[in-house]
Length: 142
Image 1 (spheres, rainbow, N blue to C red):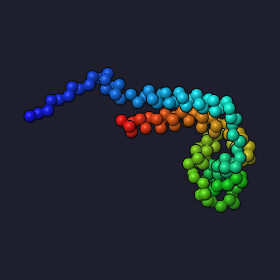
Image 2: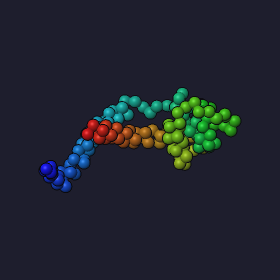
Image 3: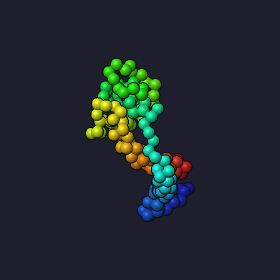
Image 4: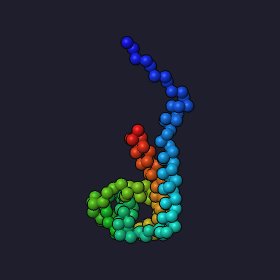
């Protein structure tokens, strides 16, 4: 005996099923935007010191010499190559340094000139990361 077939959902019902994850993502992005705005107003832009300086100088070395050599010294031809830092953030910075017109021979001046661009790109990516995390978590729960 054949099983009775379930009726096919209408196009409007299937569209609702496909985009029901959108509301939690939008709410999460809105909350993240509010929290981000509060955080920006309470905390000034972080200085380029210590680890941030090391990542900055390493990114400049990747762009200028095509060598991954982590350190806080300005990139120079004599620096030995090493891989003591995770390359993800360095490669992110290197992309920004590579396309920046304000890069100069003075590594410190370049870092100071490009820091606002790096900061703004990070701020723009923050809500996208929240949306991606919430969307993937919601889709996994379905």
